[in-house]
Length: 436
Image (cartoon, rainbow, N blue to C red; front, top):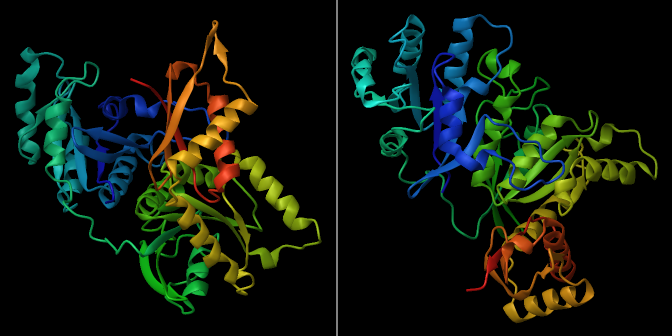
């Protein structure tokens, strides 16, 4: 099930980022310092009661030097295109402004559910300020206070009523779903066509030619696959050509629907920050990952070129040390045959379960090899380890005190598990829990 998306829309200085951070809470902060993961605050996961969802802060989308009202319009259009529900945020202390009315006009045409929120209603005596906002035509305004965290529960209840009830793109469990993510013009559409063996997707040298994510079903050696192509990351008007952040928004939904994510890199251009940003989201989402270096035919090579390029990828993508790297050319179809077997392997490892007794033998051997750390004279004790889920493989280590499980020792345990069972192509997650 793909998480529904809420977008917060409104003119500047109404408190969009404050509300975004309130809803997201601690999830926005860096909990785990993984080298090489670039984070972006305009899009994050959140939860309310039994609902998991993603949320966009359009105020974080930099439109550049566009005029004031044009920036508002373009940010709102991005939200309309990407969101299932829109929170229209206004400022109760300033009343309804002409800029609010401009946003309202855009949202009328959206054909998406809109929940109207009036911010900066910091105490009950200010509730009378909300009545003017009925004039915007979006029904009941919800009084909230970003600075005090008031009213957000009612607001999220209202938004959750509009969440889609079912993913419209469900496939059978035996179908491997994989997406292609990366910057525009790295050759994603060409790669899709090469795998499909037909011109299913429009291919062009102009960045952002493909307009929407496209699902393609393909059968290879009796196995069924769904290819989710996200090539259309920056189309639909100038806004998509001027903000790289939009490409991240388009990639994230495809990532969530995927079992395996292909991070496509242009061999001619090398690696830039945007590649790391998009790959970081796939890693954090816990998806299996294969790094695909496309346009390898266009690179002048000797016997050292591939090894040097691989070392460069490993240096830039420190958090993807588990991901295999495939070098190919979608244009000439050279080495294209190596991709499906790697996708299969990553998917298989993503779903792998390890027998508890064997797992504990490996962990206890690791502890014997490298004794657990101490802190202020207190030593970490590991009692037993069990696997609790797959996609990605997730393990719980029961200990005397989770605070004693330092990140470096957790990493050591992960490396021993990988050495024993492989898990190539998939992240694995390890959590320390106190034994009750």
